[in-house]
Image (cartoon, rainbow, N blue to C red; front, side, top):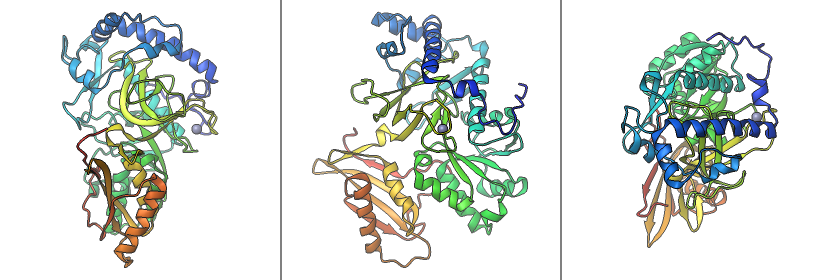
Length: 447
Ligand SMILES: [Zn+2]
């Protein structure tokens, strides 16, 4: 693919699409959606069968008509893959046309395959280039790609950086020593990591005798994704303080693209690529469509994908959509994600997400930043307990820390934890190399 050769000072990668006035953007989405539904009906056995059973015509008149269509989710992917063909009944093209596949991380159940034909893959890369440009990447940047390449949809994103002209440094998921060595020698200006790993790598660098601000002075931007932490302002700040770099949150999912949305310089939500993905927010219990600004489950519909069109894919992520104009001038809506539906717990009728608790823990300078949450049932009600670590070098009494954190949690979440347990630094042992699991769910009845 030829480079676009955009002047470095041009603000938008694709000005016409990114700043399209909303009425025009919605008209464009409708045109794309009509084609995507018709294509899906004609080429994907699952959609034809399901919509025929429901008496639904794929021909629609307005974006609102999409509400009539049934949701799909991970279980639909699992049930249809391998049925009738290798990629199964959601696939819209012959296997010969498929050039790339990712799989889901498979955290629950069988991993699912996510196929791309060449057009899908080109669109995917164009989206990555646009989101990188939006985060400030230019052809004179060096981008260190420390992501896993093994079947992971974040892997190919490095090509999106190269396509805008940046230097792609394909490091992959390597042990932290090797990564720090590469960073020291190649002095990247950009890198991508999960929030917990960006934080942990900073700790490791300090342990190894590096001064991140000096030894990795070239690093100016860290892109993070894969955990809600990227959207928690206090977590971003903690990472920024270690590296003296600006942190941008990106969001992707194996079912669609490595990144589907990313922050602009104002960092008030993540601009979703609305010319390729239509986003809805629905009531997670009833499926009823909610207004922009209301919190619910995020549902995505692809607008231009053919190897596996996703029509109303219910993600299990709880969040809200802001389609008011952004200060950056982009008209594409911004998503705000609170966390996973299955990690939300209800205490005294208040919805609490692990990300709410992380916000409080990361904001407290007397704590290391690590934490563990346990949600459990007692006398038929859900309660939660939070474990934290005292920051290295502090001699503040544990009971004083516990009291302060309890009060802060009550203020921020609306409900007091049953208790706060305080440990020494590293006492929790929850730091993981990549995705960290800090939530223990012992509830008998999940939401
Ligand atoms: Zn913006």
